Amino acid sequence: MNSKNLIIGISITVVWFLVIGLFCVQNNFVFTNRELNSLGDFLAGIFAPVAFLWLILGYLQQGKQLDQNTKVLEQQEKALQLQIEEMKNGLEQQKQLVQTQKEQQLEQRKQLSPKIFISDFHARAVFGNDLSADNSSGEYIYNNVVFITIYFNLENLGEEAYHFKIIEKNSLECLEQIDVLKRSETYKIKLYLSTKLVDQLNLNKILDEFFNLSYECKNGVKIQRDLFMQLYPRNVNSPFFHVNMYLDD
Image (cartoon, rainbow, N blue to C red; front, top):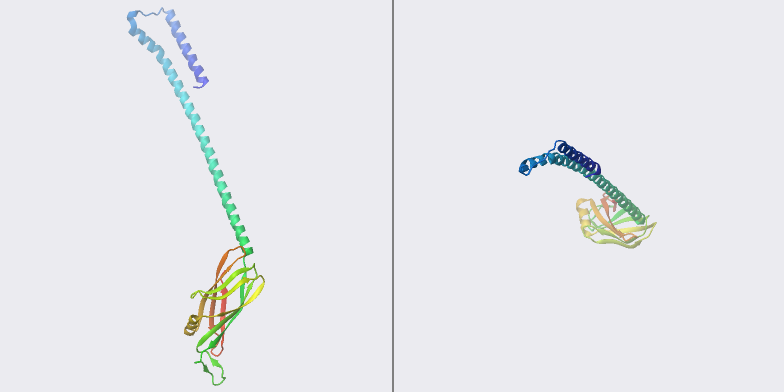
């Protein structure tokens, strides 16, 4: 109980008992041994208001304590909310930091990565013995391909690439292998298609095929890319073929 309520309670109690005492003195109010019941009723009547007063003061004090506890809990809740907000801000900053680090690593990886381009691609076929000739011109007519070679230039404009390979996706046969693709150098590549692909070309008169390019960057990261090739004859009397080739991003 706080000091204010305590002083009020004591003051009222003292005043109350003084008033009762003065009343008894002025009226010669006494009890004999035979009037114990009356004495009990008298004392109950005297102390009941005092007890009720202290009960009210205790109730008021309890209400104030509850208010104080509620305020303390509210302050704790606010502090907890601030901590949660700080944690959220910290997590957001961590996410941004991680994202920035990823972007920096990606940029560094790009700087350390080779930049490979292909150009000047063409193809030449060798026909079998069952080819026929045009009587008017004497030129060979496209009939049955037994062997075909793909030519193109491979240029690296980025950092050096190591263990470079061109692999036929279906057969997993390695068609070309270069230990080091040096920077700013152009390599003339010559690929010999497998018998299976030649058979597909003879059957469909057009060939769509994917090759796998694999190499290792300067920082040790291994890269795999798809090289798409489309092959079809220029005309019926030419050993040269149209070739479309491109690398995925």
